[in-house]
Image (cartoon, rainbow, N blue to C red):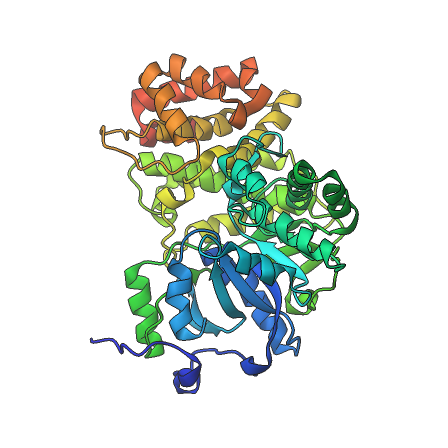
Length: 494
């Protein structure tokens, strides 16, 4: 079937098929109140959908201006279609399509940093939100502090009005607002960082203090950095996905997003300059996000990473494929079992039901979430997803065998060679360092495990813990001896 080449846009919204949801408000009346840094698929399938719901309640001053820090791809895809795009919610029963109108404009930071700073400094902007991934904060994951030697930080401190990094843009815009006598905006982190609001506040104020101690103090005293927990599985969009969505719409959508039915957003209710009525759209507003954040990091994200590294090594392309292997499904359940005892949840929280829902979501056959995609940037993710639970279990003198196998899977993966000797495209800020350590150690667990555990930016002092070193080295040895599939089967059957 030949697809319609006419692009989705406001001129043809009323010509969409009846089953396609569309913005339930007059988009011409919407004005920006949010700048979002990191205009990727996750934001467009999660926070932008919530804001779209808020706009439908009459909150017309909370539209979004999106900013890509580096790549123009999203801007170039969405500008010709008036920044409208489709969210395709996929379940085994079928797919629901919804056109989102909350995104009003987009900029590419690298092309015109001054324009982005100007938009963020506009008094109409009351929230700057972020999904720049863990590596986008230019910090040391093990400590949560700004990495002052990071190339982007060095650049931004010497080019204050033309930054590259998310912290650089935030500080430059806040400095502009302070100079103009304007209140600060709220900085709303939606990334998987431990205590993400507090961590980003520390990173931003440390960066600002390097520029001006007074500026750093002003930000610390006046700006709000609420912590959040976000949860929705959002695979990368493929050409086949674009064709399927465009066929359903009858118009071409250059960059739809694919996602699952489940969505959750827990937000610490602390904002400098107001917020939309998030609770009316299902957002959980709380005084303490930390228990929910740890629950998600240590149950969902940790088991996701274990499935990603070990599943990739076993030859599985997607998480759903991996979950079809009952041994890997049991592995995911065991990661959650080990982590659950490290959590202290509010009364009424049903962790068993949450764990069961995760296993069902991972197995969703309509969601093609690639193991390779989840495996990206492991050096930034391991401290929050796996190492914290390992530290807590060791403090209780509990075994860490399942988490150790997941860490060993990461170690085997970052050698950049799979079990057949083929190349792995490792995407990680420290990929070069890992490759060098792997070449020097060779495929010998007793040499490779200690070398990687010695990477301070990832493991910190935990890497020297004898029980952890022993468990990880033994698990890596089994991976080299038996391969990932057999090692997982043996582990979960023990």
